[in-house]
Length: 460
Picture (cartoon, rainbow, N blue to C red):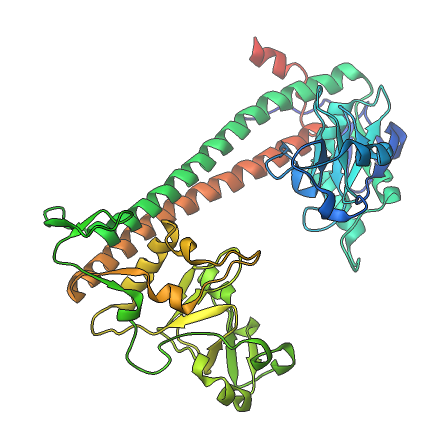
């Protein structure tokens, strides 16, 4: 879509704005506001969060696309009263002022329920004639985000103070009618873009569900639709090919010593054991959960200390399993590495008996057991979920003939590669749409395009 420009432009006098329409002016945000301030952490911190009460907004609720309340928490009316100066009002602009989400911003919609904010979210309250919706869009523009990035350059910790926020420069049209026309145009165009983004996100979720279903069917039913099936009386499993074996994990591990072990506990591997350029890598659970390994970022220990914890050694071709934490049960096969390695205390390693079970087949079995919730049944009841070797050893493992294991693994590699390609394409489409969204906002709120009347024309 090619959009017209204004007839005449002038130098705004502000580097980040460049030229603006001749009748516009550059203005600092503080000249439009009657309040710039942030909240505080309630006394007691997260311990006082409740499941109902007054909505308490944090940085994870503030996005350029609007408020997201799926991770919302609440505070009591009494605490809200103590924090009455940081209550949110409809029409306020919220700006994240610290951390990785620095610069994310949104407008509090009309009719919004009462809420409060913490110290990581700034409330920007405009004068009554402050063109709220226009300024809210301007705060999402690349121009403002560039200014925020500039003032943060060289800072020890990301964070904006109120003076820096007030000095952000905006390009402003002189009358409300023109600002409202720009807002109407952006409302219409961004609604279309956001709808396309949602379609791509739904597609990604469907592809992920398809991926899980493909894995589940392949490793429990096989890929031969003519195979005779048998019910082994395991409720979650249902019917499986009758020529497959049904074993436990303990039956498929190698017969060598320490084929299935967890990492060293407590004093056996502590922070003081880690050294620069050590002779032995320490493989932690983030490898199991991500499936990616950057040896340059791995912790290392000396060969001398390695000899004392050698029972936890893991080698290329072993399966590393996350033992502790939110992603327990995730697994990945250790690739070739240039040094000996041990698993850390938050991981397990499994060496498979390749005479009866392919490593890739064992991995897909573990992936499915995690996806279907069977591994989740093994965790203890503590606040920090953890797996045990004894529990994992009892997991039901299906064992087709070796040749069939390889055929199914090859099928899964091909099918999942195809699905992953589609997910990557959808993710790229979202990135392009988001770039288009930001570019359109930036062009409209700095007067690089003249959209006066376009929204009305399209609506008609």
